[in-house]
Image (tube, rainbow, N blue to C red; front, side, top):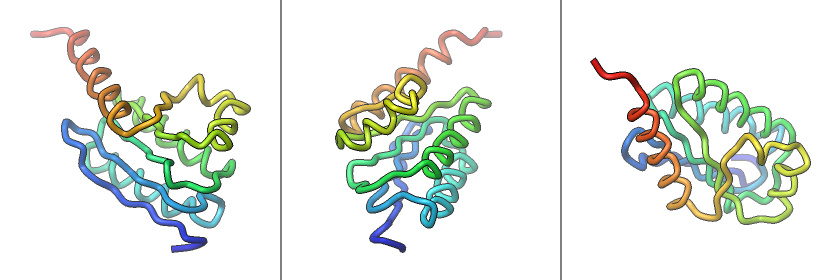
Length: 129
């Protein structure tokens, strides 16, 4: 744990993993976040919620880690959803235009509901045999 950083993962059901990120997410803590995201995806999560509610700082390295997870998930039809209420951190997503790529929500329940709906739509659109 560095700079008060902590990341924990919970199973939200329906193939959705919820990661809670606390403290400073930066160059020094990015490897731990990357490992947690990779582990969730490797264990079969098709949807990942990254809860930044307790994150006090976020840098470009962390944005790169999040985009790497987006690429991995999209390759298998999955998606990432971000939970963030901090206007300073939301501004980073806006400035980098990542708010147009990432689904950003005010709370975990809304993010999980979005991923469940997205998964249902993917299943409905898939051809059946």
